[in-house]
Length: 231
Image 1 (tube, helix red, strand yellow):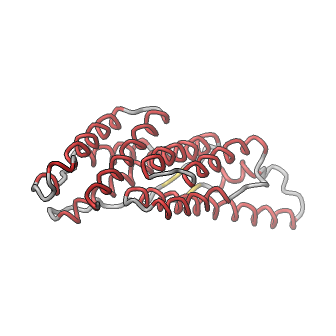
Image 2: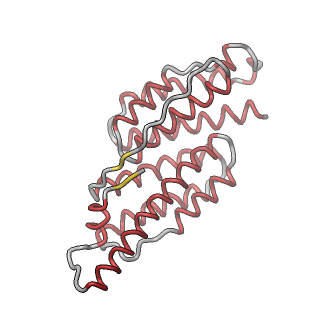
């Protein structure tokens, strides 16, 4: 993930450069903010993966790391956005189960997007190829790839990444159900239908609120299905 330096400069108040020492101090502050932004992205991506595979402790730890990051040198007008990100991260850290954590993480993603929009940040995500293959492990990896594109699309915000992720889940085949490897009484088929339902809704979601809602339900469904299979 790359963020243009201009957005950081505007948020930090670069209009008064002053002396050479002031300039060096400003560059150091900008570098710190940039590192924090990358740390937030890495931690938030780890949160999504941890929730999907039922590791609530890991999700809570990563969320706490985000909540601990602060930007005291940012201008006053950006402080509410930074506070919203921290508050959302705290909600993820305090979630009692993976379903609640999934929905709280969607609100975290929305808070990130609102901050990016307010600061006119241009977020560029490196392209990643979708895993292709018939084996179950590859198909599950493709589901993760699609939800990761949804996450990028939510926090960017990036309509292109969001559409790519939604389309990937709509077309997803869940081999473990289709091949009868899991007894039908476990109710996994319901999770599959729910996943495809929210993926279709994600295709028509336009606002941040709509996308956050659908993402939260998709991640919660993934977590619930994985828990059922694992148990």
